Length: 236
Image 1: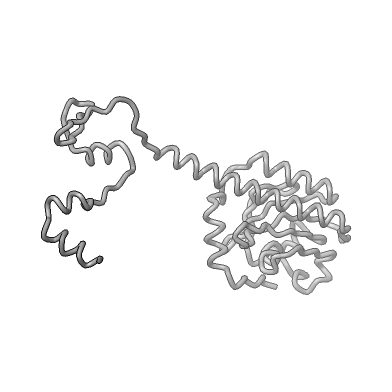
Image 2 (image 1 turned 45 degrees about the vertical axis):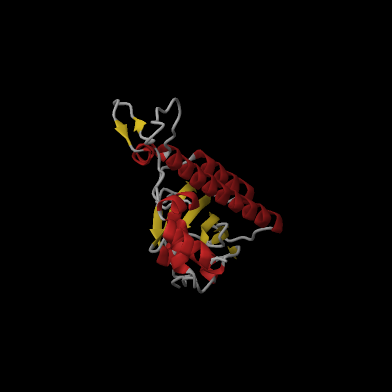
């Protein structure tokens, strides 16, 4: 059975892409979580699966070699659709999955449990799942542990996103410091090449400031007395 798509699919895909994590190299922080999920749930396979528009891609994996599979065959896409823990005790006995190539062929899924990766904005990005080749159940304690580990995956994704954004901001950051020679009459600034330029041009060249020009009330009164008197009178 092809997994249905959630009603917020466009927003969900946009949220996933915002993390810029797809097709990145393995990271120890995620691998530690999948290893722990595999151990706690006593399953030989564990995955951090991110459900893209046409595929599910594995940020971390234990027990399989594949890096991704088609979304059409994805158990995790069903988790994304329902945005809650999904447990399949015997995939061959479940009409949604009995003819799934991942069940009838490698990796021969019989048991599956997946906890959704819910981003702070409410979008389900994928799942942390455990898989076994024999049917069985998942105790409430193990189900709770799997959900907690899924929240840790989301925390890692958030930390990764914030770190990238801070690095980008630091790279673009420009600051002014030191002695700034400025003419006391025209307010021009002497640059490092010993040339004088307007303060606006100097600050624009050394920062990300964008100027918008206007005039203050004192300058308006001095330079445009007729206009200022008319304008000021309209406010009384």
